[in-house]
Image (tube, rainbow, N blue to C red; front, top):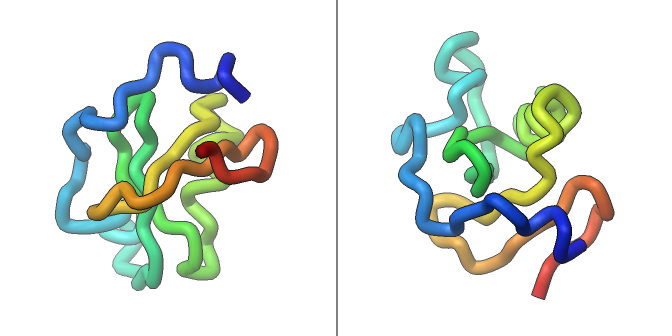
Amino acid sequence: MDSHLEGTNRDIAPTTPEGCTQCLANGTRWIDLHKCITCGEVVCCSSGEAHSRKHFEKTGHAVVVHYPNPSWTWCWAHNAYIK
């Protein structure tokens, strides 16, 4: 999992601090948000759209933090929390 942390920055500025980039564009609602710590994109996990997972599949950016309070870190490549 350490290799997925290379090139990441937990403090990267969010691209859309007001919510999920894709849900805002589509007019859909989200429940839980993640921030990609490679590019800063804010994406949802539990809207039914699973934009966080789709972002990983499209970009290969595996690691996200809970947003707006980065209380945990998740690696999509391993489907596991990172301590």
